[in-house]
Length: 376
Image (cartoon, rainbow, N blue to C red; front, side):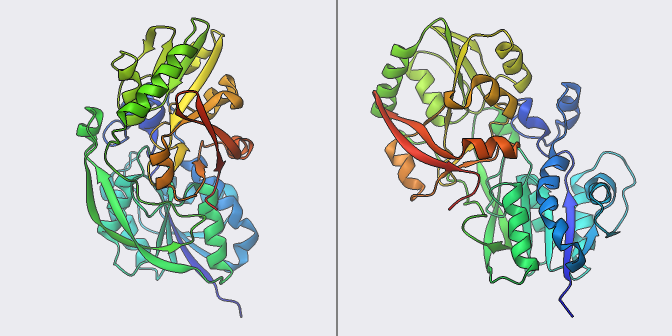
Protein backbone atom coordinates (compact mmCIF):
# COMPACT_ATOMS: atom_id res chain seq x y z
CA UNK A 1 0.00 0.00 0.00
CA UNK A 2 1.37 3.36 -0.99
CA UNK A 3 1.94 5.99 1.68
CA UNK A 4 -0.81 8.61 1.90
CA UNK A 5 0.69 12.07 2.18
CA UNK A 6 -1.06 14.17 4.83
CA UNK A 7 -1.18 17.76 3.61
CA UNK A 8 -2.58 20.75 5.48
CA UNK A 9 -3.67 23.92 3.67
CA UNK A 10 -4.13 27.39 5.11
CA UNK A 11 -4.56 30.59 3.06
CA UNK A 12 -4.48 34.17 4.24
CA UNK A 13 -7.09 35.50 1.77
CA UNK A 14 -6.11 39.12 2.48
CA UNK A 15 -2.43 38.62 1.69
CA UNK A 16 -1.00 40.89 -0.99
CA UNK A 17 -3.91 43.33 -1.11
CA UNK A 18 -1.69 46.28 -0.27
CA UNK A 19 0.79 45.58 -3.07
CA UNK A 20 -0.86 46.95 -6.20
CA UNK A 21 -2.33 49.77 -4.13
CA UNK A 22 1.17 50.87 -3.15
CA UNK A 23 0.40 50.49 0.57
CA UNK A 24 3.69 48.65 1.33
CA UNK A 25 1.91 45.78 3.05
CA UNK A 26 -1.53 44.40 3.85
CA UNK A 27 -1.70 44.41 7.64
CA UNK A 28 -4.53 46.71 8.70
CA UNK A 29 -5.07 48.18 5.22
CA UNK A 30 -7.07 45.44 3.48
CA UNK A 31 -10.33 47.40 3.63
CA UNK A 32 -8.64 50.45 2.12
CA UNK A 33 -7.09 48.37 -0.68
CA UNK A 34 -10.43 46.73 -1.52
CA UNK A 35 -12.06 50.17 -1.63
CA UNK A 36 -9.40 51.19 -4.17
CA UNK A 37 -10.54 48.36 -6.43
CA UNK A 38 -7.67 45.95 -5.77
CA UNK A 39 -8.63 42.34 -6.47
CA UNK A 40 -7.54 39.68 -3.95
CA UNK A 41 -4.82 37.51 -5.46
CA UNK A 42 -3.99 34.93 -2.78
CA UNK A 43 -6.49 32.34 -4.03
CA UNK A 44 -5.10 32.48 -7.57
CA UNK A 45 -1.55 32.14 -6.28
CA UNK A 46 -2.49 29.00 -4.36
CA UNK A 47 -4.42 27.62 -7.32
CA UNK A 48 -1.20 27.69 -9.39
CA UNK A 49 0.48 25.47 -6.81
CA UNK A 50 -2.44 23.10 -6.20
CA UNK A 51 -3.05 22.42 -9.89
CA UNK A 52 0.29 20.60 -9.95
CA UNK A 53 -1.01 18.25 -7.26
CA UNK A 54 -4.09 17.10 -9.19
CA UNK A 55 -2.36 14.04 -10.72
CA UNK A 56 -1.47 12.88 -7.19
CA UNK A 57 -4.92 13.24 -5.61
CA UNK A 58 -5.13 9.51 -4.83
CA UNK A 59 -1.98 9.78 -2.74
CA UNK A 60 -3.18 12.81 -0.77
CA UNK A 61 -5.20 13.28 2.36
CA UNK A 62 -5.83 17.00 2.64
CA UNK A 63 -6.88 18.90 5.74
CA UNK A 64 -7.99 22.46 5.10
CA UNK A 65 -8.91 25.58 6.99
CA UNK A 66 -12.55 26.50 6.33
CA UNK A 67 -14.02 28.74 3.62
CA UNK A 68 -11.72 31.28 1.97
CA UNK A 69 -8.81 30.07 4.08
CA UNK A 70 -8.53 26.84 2.09
CA UNK A 71 -11.62 24.67 1.72
CA UNK A 72 -13.37 26.81 -0.92
CA UNK A 73 -10.47 26.58 -3.36
CA UNK A 74 -10.05 22.83 -2.86
CA UNK A 75 -13.74 22.34 -3.60
CA UNK A 76 -13.39 24.34 -6.84
CA UNK A 77 -10.48 22.15 -7.90
CA UNK A 78 -12.29 18.94 -7.02
CA UNK A 79 -9.69 17.87 -4.45
CA UNK A 80 -11.17 15.82 -1.61
CA UNK A 81 -10.46 17.29 1.80
CA UNK A 82 -11.49 17.45 5.43
CA UNK A 83 -12.38 20.85 6.86
CA UNK A 84 -10.68 21.63 10.17
CA UNK A 85 -11.94 24.29 12.58
CA UNK A 86 -14.46 27.09 12.18
CA UNK A 87 -14.63 30.65 10.90
CA UNK A 88 -17.26 32.78 12.60
CA UNK A 89 -16.68 36.07 10.80
CA UNK A 90 -16.14 36.91 7.11
CA UNK A 91 -12.97 38.96 7.65
CA UNK A 92 -10.12 36.71 8.70
CA UNK A 93 -7.59 37.79 11.34
CA UNK A 94 -4.12 36.85 12.54
CA UNK A 95 -5.79 35.09 15.45
CA UNK A 96 -7.73 32.92 12.99
CA UNK A 97 -4.49 31.98 11.26
CA UNK A 98 -2.80 31.01 14.51
CA UNK A 99 -5.77 29.05 15.84
CA UNK A 100 -6.39 27.15 12.61
CA UNK A 101 -2.69 26.43 12.05
CA UNK A 102 -2.53 24.85 15.51
CA UNK A 103 -5.65 22.76 14.83
CA UNK A 104 -4.31 21.61 11.46
CA UNK A 105 -0.96 20.64 12.97
CA UNK A 106 -2.79 18.36 15.41
CA UNK A 107 -3.78 16.16 12.45
CA UNK A 108 -0.27 14.78 12.18
CA UNK A 109 0.55 16.54 8.93
CA UNK A 110 3.48 15.60 6.74
CA UNK A 111 3.46 19.21 5.53
CA UNK A 112 1.52 22.37 6.30
CA UNK A 113 1.23 24.41 3.10
CA UNK A 114 0.28 28.02 3.73
CA UNK A 115 -0.07 31.19 1.68
CA UNK A 116 0.62 34.75 2.75
CA UNK A 117 3.49 37.06 3.52
CA UNK A 118 5.85 37.63 6.42
CA UNK A 119 2.97 38.39 8.81
CA UNK A 120 1.40 35.03 8.00
CA UNK A 121 4.74 33.28 8.50
CA UNK A 122 4.96 34.91 11.93
CA UNK A 123 1.52 33.59 12.82
CA UNK A 124 2.43 30.07 11.67
CA UNK A 125 5.67 30.24 13.64
CA UNK A 126 3.76 31.22 16.77
CA UNK A 127 1.22 28.40 16.38
CA UNK A 128 3.01 25.20 15.36
CA UNK A 129 5.69 23.12 17.02
CA UNK A 130 9.33 23.35 16.01
CA UNK A 131 9.17 19.95 14.35
CA UNK A 132 6.24 20.66 12.03
CA UNK A 133 7.30 20.76 8.38
CA UNK A 134 5.89 23.80 6.58
CA UNK A 135 6.18 25.53 3.23
CA UNK A 136 4.94 28.97 2.22
CA UNK A 137 3.35 29.99 -1.06
CA UNK A 138 4.34 33.64 -1.56
CA UNK A 139 1.21 35.79 -1.74
CA UNK A 140 2.10 38.80 0.41
CA UNK A 141 3.66 42.16 -0.36
CA UNK A 142 6.83 41.69 1.67
CA UNK A 143 8.59 38.35 1.80
CA UNK A 144 11.81 38.56 3.79
CA UNK A 145 11.48 35.13 5.40
CA UNK A 146 13.26 32.05 4.09
CA UNK A 147 10.22 29.78 4.50
CA UNK A 148 8.68 30.60 1.11
CA UNK A 149 9.09 28.98 -2.27
CA UNK A 150 10.38 31.31 -4.98
CA UNK A 151 6.88 31.34 -6.54
CA UNK A 152 3.62 29.32 -6.41
CA UNK A 153 4.58 26.82 -9.09
CA UNK A 154 7.86 26.10 -7.36
CA UNK A 155 5.88 25.36 -4.19
CA UNK A 156 3.69 22.93 -6.11
CA UNK A 157 6.69 21.18 -7.64
CA UNK A 158 8.38 20.84 -4.27
CA UNK A 159 5.24 19.28 -2.76
CA UNK A 160 5.06 16.79 -5.63
CA UNK A 161 8.63 15.70 -4.84
CA UNK A 162 7.60 15.06 -1.25
CA UNK A 163 4.47 13.15 -2.28
CA UNK A 164 6.57 10.91 -4.54
CA UNK A 165 9.03 10.19 -1.75
CA UNK A 166 11.97 11.92 -3.39
CA UNK A 167 14.95 12.74 -1.21
CA UNK A 168 14.49 16.36 -0.10
CA UNK A 169 16.69 17.87 2.56
CA UNK A 170 15.01 19.53 5.55
CA UNK A 171 16.36 22.74 7.03
CA UNK A 172 15.56 25.40 9.60
CA UNK A 173 14.63 28.69 7.92
CA UNK A 174 14.32 32.14 9.44
CA UNK A 175 11.01 33.91 9.91
CA UNK A 176 11.54 37.65 9.58
CA UNK A 177 9.15 40.58 9.39
CA UNK A 178 9.34 44.34 9.29
CA UNK A 179 7.66 47.18 11.11
CA UNK A 180 5.02 48.17 8.53
CA UNK A 181 4.50 51.66 9.97
CA UNK A 182 8.24 52.33 9.70
CA UNK A 183 8.19 50.68 6.25
CA UNK A 184 5.52 53.08 4.99
CA UNK A 185 7.59 55.96 6.37
CA UNK A 186 10.56 54.79 4.29
CA UNK A 187 12.55 52.83 6.87
CA UNK A 188 13.26 49.13 6.52
CA UNK A 189 13.54 47.57 9.97
CA UNK A 190 13.54 43.78 10.11
CA UNK A 191 13.30 41.52 13.12
CA UNK A 192 13.92 37.82 13.63
CA UNK A 193 10.82 36.07 15.00
CA UNK A 194 11.95 32.47 15.00
CA UNK A 195 12.55 29.55 12.71
CA UNK A 196 10.43 26.98 10.91
CA UNK A 197 11.38 23.65 9.43
CA UNK A 198 11.03 23.63 5.64
CA UNK A 199 11.82 21.23 2.80
CA UNK A 200 14.88 22.74 1.15
CA UNK A 201 15.60 22.35 -2.54
CA UNK A 202 17.82 25.06 -4.02
CA UNK A 203 15.76 25.55 -7.17
CA UNK A 204 12.52 26.14 -5.31
CA UNK A 205 13.07 27.86 -1.93
CA UNK A 206 14.11 31.51 -1.73
CA UNK A 207 16.95 32.94 0.29
CA UNK A 208 16.44 35.28 3.24
CA UNK A 209 16.40 38.86 1.97
CA UNK A 210 19.56 40.80 2.67
CA UNK A 211 18.93 44.09 4.44
CA UNK A 212 20.79 47.33 4.36
CA UNK A 213 21.28 50.01 1.73
CA UNK A 214 24.16 49.56 -0.64
CA UNK A 215 26.17 52.76 -1.04
CA UNK A 216 27.87 52.78 -4.44
CA UNK A 217 27.51 56.46 -5.17
CA UNK A 218 29.98 56.72 -8.01
CA UNK A 219 28.47 53.80 -9.92
CA UNK A 220 24.97 55.15 -9.50
CA UNK A 221 26.12 58.60 -10.58
CA UNK A 222 27.46 56.98 -13.75
CA UNK A 223 24.16 55.20 -14.38
CA UNK A 224 22.29 58.45 -13.68
CA UNK A 225 24.44 60.17 -16.30
CA UNK A 226 23.48 57.48 -18.80
CA UNK A 227 19.80 57.81 -17.92
CA UNK A 228 20.00 61.58 -18.26
CA UNK A 229 21.24 61.07 -21.81
CA UNK A 230 18.29 58.76 -22.47
CA UNK A 231 15.71 61.18 -21.13
CA UNK A 232 13.29 62.26 -23.76
CA UNK A 233 9.88 63.89 -23.48
CA UNK A 234 8.54 61.04 -25.61
CA UNK A 235 9.85 58.27 -23.34
CA UNK A 236 8.52 57.59 -19.86
CA UNK A 237 10.38 55.63 -17.18
CA UNK A 238 8.68 53.54 -14.49
CA UNK A 239 11.16 53.01 -11.66
CA UNK A 240 10.56 50.22 -9.18
CA UNK A 241 11.20 50.45 -5.43
CA UNK A 242 14.49 49.95 -3.65
CA UNK A 243 17.57 51.83 -2.58
CA UNK A 244 19.22 51.56 -5.99
CA UNK A 245 16.47 53.37 -7.88
CA UNK A 246 15.92 55.74 -4.96
CA UNK A 247 19.55 56.85 -5.07
CA UNK A 248 19.42 56.97 -8.85
CA UNK A 249 16.54 59.45 -8.70
CA UNK A 250 18.42 61.49 -6.12
CA UNK A 251 21.39 61.64 -8.50
CA UNK A 252 18.98 62.98 -11.14
CA UNK A 253 17.79 65.67 -8.72
CA UNK A 254 14.42 64.12 -7.82
CA UNK A 255 13.00 63.11 -4.46
CA UNK A 256 11.66 59.66 -5.17
CA UNK A 257 10.19 57.11 -2.79
CA UNK A 258 12.41 54.42 -1.32
CA UNK A 259 9.66 51.82 -1.16
CA UNK A 260 7.30 52.99 -3.91
CA UNK A 261 7.12 53.13 -7.69
CA UNK A 262 7.97 56.47 -9.29
CA UNK A 263 7.37 57.67 -12.86
CA UNK A 264 9.72 59.94 -14.76
CA UNK A 265 9.37 61.56 -18.18
CA UNK A 266 11.94 63.99 -19.50
CA UNK A 267 12.94 66.23 -16.63
CA UNK A 268 9.66 65.77 -14.78
CA UNK A 269 8.74 63.37 -12.00
CA UNK A 270 5.16 62.58 -13.04
CA UNK A 271 4.16 60.30 -10.16
CA UNK A 272 5.58 59.45 -6.76
CA UNK A 273 4.55 56.24 -5.01
CA UNK A 274 2.21 55.26 -7.84
CA UNK A 275 -0.43 52.53 -7.58
CA UNK A 276 -0.92 49.83 -10.19
CA UNK A 277 -4.13 51.51 -11.34
CA UNK A 278 -2.36 54.85 -11.79
CA UNK A 279 0.33 53.18 -13.89
CA UNK A 280 -2.32 51.48 -16.01
CA UNK A 281 -4.23 54.70 -16.62
CA UNK A 282 -0.98 56.42 -17.63
CA UNK A 283 -0.06 53.63 -20.05
CA UNK A 284 -3.48 53.76 -21.68
CA UNK A 285 -2.62 57.28 -22.82
CA UNK A 286 0.00 55.77 -25.11
CA UNK A 287 3.60 56.73 -25.74
CA UNK A 288 6.88 54.88 -25.31
CA UNK A 289 7.74 53.49 -21.89
CA UNK A 290 10.56 51.72 -20.09
CA UNK A 291 10.49 49.86 -16.78
CA UNK A 292 13.58 49.94 -14.59
CA UNK A 293 13.66 47.47 -11.70
CA UNK A 294 16.39 46.39 -9.32
CA UNK A 295 17.14 42.92 -8.00
CA UNK A 296 16.58 42.22 -4.32
CA UNK A 297 19.96 41.58 -2.75
CA UNK A 298 20.53 37.96 -1.84
CA UNK A 299 17.20 36.76 -3.26
CA UNK A 300 17.39 38.06 -6.82
CA UNK A 301 13.70 38.72 -7.41
CA UNK A 302 13.07 41.41 -10.01
CA UNK A 303 9.27 41.01 -10.16
CA UNK A 304 6.80 40.04 -7.47
CA UNK A 305 8.55 41.17 -4.29
CA UNK A 306 7.53 44.61 -3.06
CA UNK A 307 6.82 45.88 -6.58
CA UNK A 308 3.39 44.39 -7.31
CA UNK A 309 2.38 47.80 -8.66
CA UNK A 310 4.35 46.73 -11.74
CA UNK A 311 1.78 44.08 -12.60
CA UNK A 312 1.73 41.63 -15.49
CA UNK A 313 -0.56 43.85 -17.53
CA UNK A 314 1.73 46.83 -16.94
CA UNK A 315 4.75 44.83 -18.12
CA UNK A 316 2.91 43.61 -21.21
CA UNK A 317 1.71 47.13 -22.04
CA UNK A 318 5.25 48.50 -21.81
CA UNK A 319 6.71 45.57 -23.72
CA UNK A 320 8.86 42.71 -22.50
CA UNK A 321 11.97 44.06 -24.20
CA UNK A 322 11.51 47.35 -22.37
CA UNK A 323 11.87 45.75 -18.93
CA UNK A 324 15.40 46.65 -17.81
CA UNK A 325 17.25 45.70 -14.64
CA UNK A 326 19.62 47.98 -12.78
CA UNK A 327 22.24 46.22 -10.70
CA UNK A 328 25.79 47.09 -9.74
CA UNK A 329 28.42 44.39 -10.01
CA UNK A 330 28.52 44.21 -6.22
CA UNK A 331 24.82 43.35 -6.08
CA UNK A 332 25.17 40.77 -8.84
CA UNK A 333 27.93 39.07 -6.85
CA UNK A 334 25.54 38.57 -3.92
CA UNK A 335 23.50 36.25 -6.16
CA UNK A 336 26.45 33.88 -6.47
CA UNK A 337 25.49 32.94 -10.01
CA UNK A 338 21.80 32.35 -9.29
CA UNK A 339 19.43 33.84 -11.89
CA UNK A 340 17.11 36.77 -11.37
CA UNK A 341 13.77 35.41 -10.18
CA UNK A 342 10.37 36.13 -11.75
CA UNK A 343 7.09 35.90 -9.85
CA UNK A 344 4.78 38.35 -11.62
CA UNK A 345 1.62 36.41 -10.78
CA UNK A 346 1.22 35.48 -14.45
CA UNK A 347 2.98 32.15 -15.14
CA UNK A 348 2.90 32.70 -18.90
CA UNK A 349 4.60 36.07 -18.56
CA UNK A 350 7.25 34.57 -16.27
CA UNK A 351 7.96 31.94 -18.91
CA UNK A 352 8.19 34.59 -21.64
CA UNK A 353 10.62 36.65 -19.56
CA UNK A 354 12.80 33.63 -18.77
CA UNK A 355 16.13 33.99 -20.52
CA UNK A 356 18.77 36.70 -20.45
CA UNK A 357 17.82 40.23 -19.42
CA UNK A 358 19.61 43.51 -20.06
CA UNK A 359 21.30 44.82 -16.92
CA UNK A 360 22.48 48.41 -16.53
CA UNK A 361 25.63 48.23 -14.43
CA UNK A 362 27.46 51.49 -15.23
CA UNK A 363 27.79 54.38 -17.64
CA UNK A 364 26.89 53.03 -21.08
CA UNK A 365 27.68 49.64 -19.62
CA UNK A 366 25.23 46.82 -20.06
CA UNK A 367 25.48 43.17 -19.14
CA UNK A 368 23.34 40.15 -19.87
CA UNK A 369 22.18 38.12 -16.90
CA UNK A 370 19.83 35.12 -16.78
CA UNK A 371 16.31 35.37 -15.39
CA UNK A 372 14.03 32.47 -14.57
CA UNK A 373 10.80 31.58 -12.81
CA UNK A 374 12.84 29.18 -10.66
CA UNK A 375 16.38 29.16 -9.31
CA UNK A 376 18.74 26.80 -11.06
